[in-house]
Image 1 (cartoon, rainbow, N blue to C red):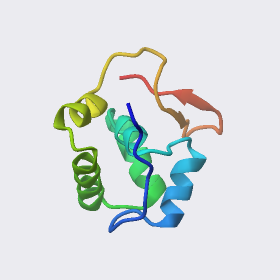
Image 2 (image 1 turned 180 degrees about the horizontal axis):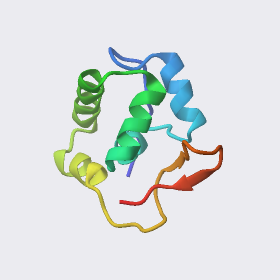
Image 3 (image 1 turned 180 degrees about the vertical axis):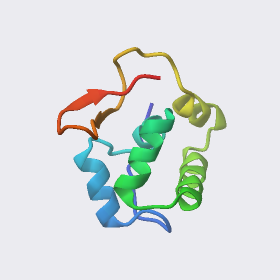
Image 4 (image 1 turned 120 degrees about the vertical axis):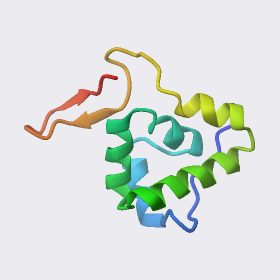
Length: 101
């Protein structure tokens, strides 16, 4: 798979891309894949400061950028992974723990 680098657009600023990169999200594929679970979706949306409607539009634009509906659907489909997946900070303490589906 050839990764598509994140680029500023109507929804992503250079600053929001820097925030995503600080969370190890550097490509369209990684961003789409990181939004497969509801908790991760909310976390990513909050990181880049978009409301739900604009975030959905961003994801739609990124899916179009891939050019393959099958690939985009595969990346955003939740899959069982146990302790694998996006690591989110625990709101009750500063440690991080993997999200579970």
